[in-house]
Amino acid sequence: MIYLIRHGIAEAYSTSDFVRELTIEGKIKLKAAFLGFAEDFDSKDYKIYVSPAVRTMQTAEILSDILKCDFETIDDLYDSRYEDFVRELSKDMDYIIVGHEPYISDLIYQITGRNVIVSRGSIHKLEV
Image 1 (tube, helix red, strand yellow):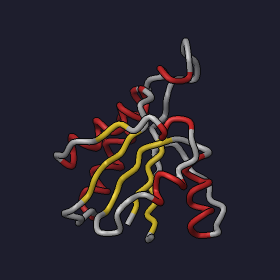
Image 2 (tube, one colour):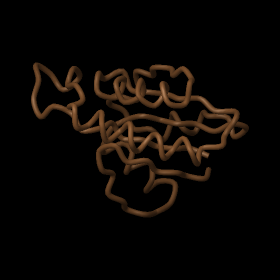
Image 3 (cartoon, one colour):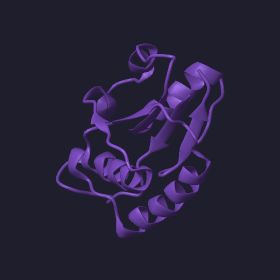
């Protein structure tokens, strides 16, 4: 199982895209969403992978505080397609990937054939 999470609501502008931070509203909405997610998340064997951008790292920090776990930063999750990365993952565990558009919706399409809208802070569950 793969859970794809798009980062929360971030600043509209900053010195660069990479350093954009979550807004206060974004943090509040993520915490509420992740509390609900944690109630239904029953995986015991999983890893969390995160883009190194500031807003995804902040999103992952909120999630890891709630799930009481660590996460790993993967540089390729910032500006690369996710298909190759996902192809290398073991089928013996579950994964949470915190990343960006359009890469999340592209991966969902590649796996399911469905075009979906991936809103900021949304969580998408894929069986692979």
